Amino acid sequence: MDANLARRGVTAPTAVYDVGGERFETPSLEFAAAVAEAHATHRRPRCLCLVEGVEMYVARLGDGYIVKRMPNTGSLHAPDCPSYEPPPEVSGLGQVLGSAITEDPATGETTLKLDFAMSKIAGRSTMPTAGAESDSVASSGTKLSLRGLLHYLWDQAELTRWQPGFAGKRSWSTVRRHLLQAAENKITRGDSLRSRLYVPEVFSVEQRDAINARRLAQWSQAIAAPGRPQHLMLLIAEVKEIAPARYGFKAVVRHMPDQAFAIDEPLYRRLGRRFESELALWGAAEDIHMVMISTFSVGASGIPTIIELSLMAVTRQWLPVDGAFEKQLVERLVADGRSFVKGLRYNLGAGSMLASATLTDCAGSAPLLFVASTGVEDYGRCLQLCDPSTPVWLWRPSREPMPPLPRPADRSKGNEGNAWATSAQAQHGSGATEAYPSV
Ligand SMILES: [Zn+2]
Image 1 (cartoon, helix red, strand yellow):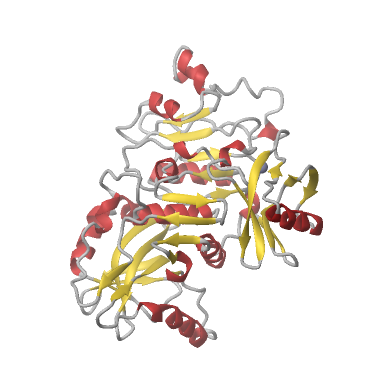
Image 2: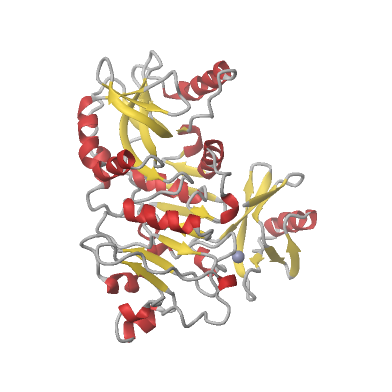
């Protein structure tokens, strides 16, 4: 978690840093002063999670500064360092990083290219073209789909991370705060993403008028006016229901009891087909929340209408899951008190192999956990994805019960290193099955 050095306004992952040859712990005023100095003299601090240190950058953030890992260096940090990220190539991030997503260490700003409209010409038909279906077709990595953007923000908000200390603490208000923070310093088509992103506040009857007033104030930028392109807003919210309304269809989201979002019939009809597996999981499991990202317009009367949308099923810890087997894996990891990062697809289709999770509580390299989906059971493909020294765990749910998981560092004294095959050993060894512990 970030520690905010309030007085000097320095935001940095909690760690030990080398700044200009001196060692600093966070949070501290000495560190804050050193960061200001490093920014003025264009020096890069180093995160000392590993002996040799990993380069970070300093950028302005409001009146203060932010210390961030350099683009595409997350996997160089120690797995238990707050700046650690799984290698981008084992999730959907690899495909879009550097093309749809470009981070500028000089300014700390990230530019996002979007594969969906954020404005429309007033009066023109709102029939979506690419719409919700664009997630399902093979998509290039040059622009983020709606789902890609949701996955990116979820990752940036660190809602894909889990450690036992988070249990019972991740509420909607936490999720909301982290999402809004993640949207800061993100630019799309020259415009701030944060100003367009609406995430409902936690509702309370006593606060109803104030909450509604804040919502309308933010939405006013999107109200249609004749003769100019109409801005669309972005919504991220938990779905309560998507159902027929008196006229057309509506999406009702949690924490907005007095305002539903209108949905037209063609979009409603497509939802059932496009999000069949997400909706099936939601319908079958009581403890699944459904998160929606959508673009919406605001009519002159203040009624919001959804233009395009995408859905994402999450567990009660708000960890996204892609199907019942991933849900089973994530639930096991949470129940076992493990620390991990959940992998997300971004733009990638269901046929692409990606690591469902990366364990960050093991000694040495972080093990990658794969769940083979039906039809994609090629073990070699998941090994090709990663560095040969990376430990790999694979579960083929159609053939076997869940194999034992790599043990966390503090419980594996004495036998670590033998229990796990690296992908290189598995590739050159006698076969994939022998690569796993036979406990
Ligand atoms: Zn580090």
